[in-house]
Image (cartoon, rainbow, N blue to C red):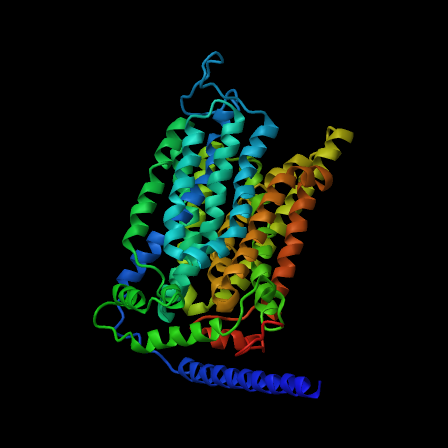
Length: 528
């Protein structure tokens, strides 16, 4: 019996020695990797034009997502057969198989189901891009985009519209995870901020284009034109290389070299950057990645900040402002057609998003997000004050018809319009684009896939909830109360920015993680 026990002890000693030897090798490899990561890469010879081409191609899916998001607004008068509305020619013969008329509930579902699809797609985006690669996933998304538009084109009842919108939203939700990650992985520090704006800029461009189509085209024709864009997306993504970081991660060093040569140009010395990628991959692969890593001591802080960015984007009041846009224009005494007013607001959003993209590397992400939160806060409280005065006047007129309070409301007609323009502009400067840019920068590589999915899911979940419940909120606490509520969230957003949000401009991933005070461990046992 003693000899058996001695055999067990001997085996344990051998296993312990092997384990210590493996740990020593891993520690040595990790130490070497961290030495490599400490160096500075010279990007002076790197070409920038291929980066812009690859970014536009990958972000083209965001343009299609914007088209899905913006489609319901200009086609609403047609789908609801609104009388006396200035709408393009469309089918009004009730006996036609192509006649479609939606009630308010059905129209609300058509509008919100894109967000529902997007939140479902966002959950799978991280897994898909880590399993199949950024490029292949982007290529495959052209199919659900096309099928979604085709279902809308041939729709003869609301259910076909619902399915088409959910499909388009699901593809858009996956794009919202994959495209920012791809752009972040191919970028160089000097233009990372500018390229990071591509996602939100393409979204608002998609919204603007579909609103322009809505000025003079039938809703089926609009959908048919939009169905062409996924084919452009497909061809564009076929042309660009896979993310070199993903190629290195899968052990395809030759493909990574080809990708870097395509992205940086033949005169660029890629060896140091490639060595840095390989070092990051060694550190990442030395650890067993699990979804539960999101709540590990070294990951939960950046994950929560990424989620916070998405929360304060959606709770800023953007849906409240756009929902009341018509009432705001009417309060200002404007006689503009509602479709034209929507186009002007979208132009405002595109213009300021573009301006912000030029300033992001000068002022920094954190500064622009702070400016955005302050501007939106002022706008929301100003809009709330105007609608409070208007609601009080309406109550006063019911009790005292001879009251002159309406003159006071008319005299303040400039306030809501000015506040709305300021709100859209400041949202486009920071709260709109910054979450999509920064979540890819602040998340550690090991949890970028699942972390990006959770952050994107949070965004689309809140968008769906706010869109679906806003009418009920407005009826419960009034327009003034709704605006003040969102203004309160903007105040919280200011404190979030001041005390929790790091500046990522010009910083390496290691420097960004240092802000949170905890580095991912060099080696983590599977039992952790």
